[in-house]
Length: 142
Image (cartoon, rainbow, N blue to C red; front, top):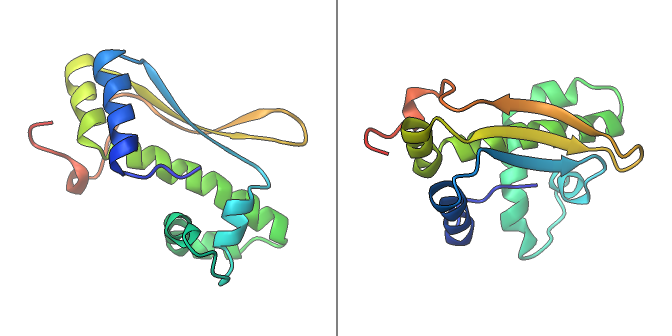
């Protein structure tokens, strides 16, 4: 899954956080994801390239860690997990989440990956409300 910071996603996020006062937000990917697999290639997918570019950025940032793994399957699964983690961080970087953290001490952010083969949800990353973020991403008056 890729969390885009487009207007539709932000309006849904704002409604969930500010109106519904959700206490938890889950980013859930799945092992064997074709989109993540496609992002690891140089093949063009037309309009999907914009969506895949975000995953390619995650791969670029963590390339050394991913490429150190032995099999294509383990590389794919690691990139799926890292993508979920980065998308959780992307949520935390929004002024919407930061404002809720400041005023409501919520929501907690969760990164999960679902195993299609075994049906098990794997917790990959947890970011409780008010977790440390690099000051570069903090807003003064969220």
